Length: 229
Figure 1: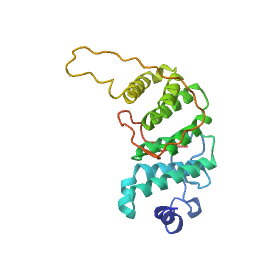
Figure 2: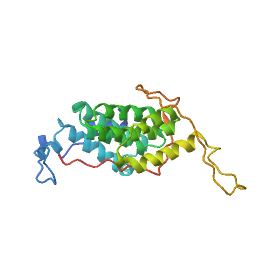
Figure 3: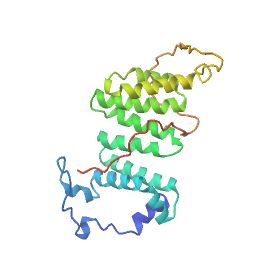
Figure 4: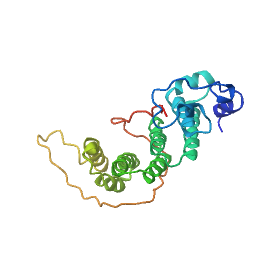
């Protein structure tokens, strides 16, 4: 447990705790569950929103507690994991946790792949599964797992993902052929280069030599949002 987590756990008083008489008087949406769950430490949504708040306001946490950004990220990720342990089948929670890795530079490749693979296992329909394939392909392109990334992009057939799929395919081609994809300055016509990439589907995660990889930011996802349930 890092210093910030110890501080919260051992010295700071949770003024929103029901044990102190606090209660939720209004919530914008309590369709899925009673609004009282928002401040109940026994509920996964409590830790999910706590994690999201720490994640979104990490600069404030850094300045106030005098800790590093890495320590703030570690605290947020641990809060997400605590929520997941309470509700391991919540797809929205699993994807919030997985998406949070995009904010960490350089990306913790192996941890992100594990998080998205866990989300894939609890996806409820093809739309959710293909959305996860997009994220897995994106990370694997950055990590150099080109054949696996292509196989997962090939599995995406939903037109809703068409634009981002094309962008990832272009990124994949550029990463695979960094020299042949460039047009010489003395040539006025562009020549398409054909490449043969085996479509190999691999179920197991391949561990990278390092857990840190830089991911392009041209199609960053939105940060997790607080849940009102």
